[in-house]
Amino acid sequence: MKFLFRGKLAILHRINVQFFSVKVNIQQIAPFEAEGVVYHADTCLPLIDAVKRKKLKFKALARYTYPGDRLTNDTMGLNSVGYWDANEPQDWGLDWHRNEGIEIHFLESGSMPYSQEGKDMMLSPNSLTITRPWEAHKVGNPKIGMGKFYWVILDLGVRRPHQKWVWPDWIMLAQNDLERLTTILRQNEKMHWKAGSRIRDCFQRISQVVNTDIEGSNASRIRLLVNYLLILILDLLNTEDMELNEDLIDSSRSVQLFLSELDKNLSDDWTIGKMAKSAGVGLTRFTHHCKRLTNLTPMRYLMIKRLEMSKKLLVEAPNLSISEIAFSCGFSTSQYFSTVFKKHEKSTPIEYRDKFLLEAVSIEDASGY
Picture 1 (cartoon, rainbow, N blue to C red):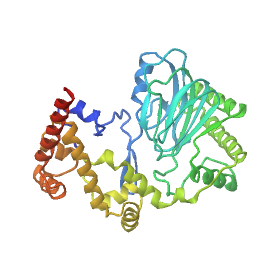
Picture 2: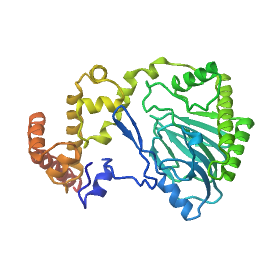
Picture 3: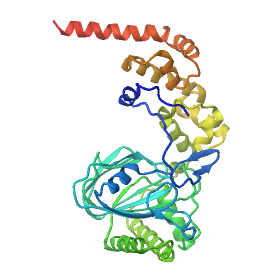
Picture 4: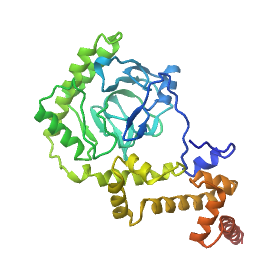
């Protein structure tokens, strides 16, 4: 793991360079690991802080790093279930994140800014949203607003679109119904629905059993209500003219998602094998899809993205040294960075920076006349 050089944090964040720090994990529970890739559950730190400041009412049952009273083994596969009730103006939100499972949200009252996969919307009463594990979403823009908001997060053992969903063994829908629900949720990209009174009543009953649970005493009721919720969601989806697209579950989409996220992880020590594992596909398949999607080999594509980021830093962060930029973009040494940069740009990093700084000064002088 690479850490920021002190004194440069604000500069780097202004230009959207993402670095990673160790997340709080009070429970010390091992995160999910699949195909060599480790996934950490979201800690919801802004929500935790808001609860401590008594900004809203909050109650949840959870496992891993999710906040709330601990779920028992009777509901394995359920990672978090709960609600918050905000009846005064809020000063926080949950920034872009992904969950390790499928998350079902429901807004009972009030209004709430919500974004998913780059699409912004304003949730209103009876809004139902569903996020798949690979879909980035945020709650608030940046503040959450006032309202009563419920959620259920189920871990289906997948992190990428092409992987097979495995529901918890206590999900008791008939095989045909479960397959239909899975197919609809995997093969369409719709994220928002208007729910009816039955779904609202189901979430209200879920909140009641969450409120009264004592160390798993309501596990059976929780399992029953989650099953009922899935039936109601299937009924809702079956009433709509859903367009299914099998391309959404092809392994090429998993590779495409990985490549789209690479800008945020350029400082990682990538190899072709590590990239393939992160995409959730085999090395040969990953290389094939990468070449088809980018017309470049994986390592060539990685190099191009690192150079693009380095040029951005050279221009927009003049206080950063060449060594700091090299490490921030994933180059092992500043010497190697300079060699690769000169080969591609026909100038050294310092010459490249000086050229743009000189042009900026010239433009500023010219505008003064």
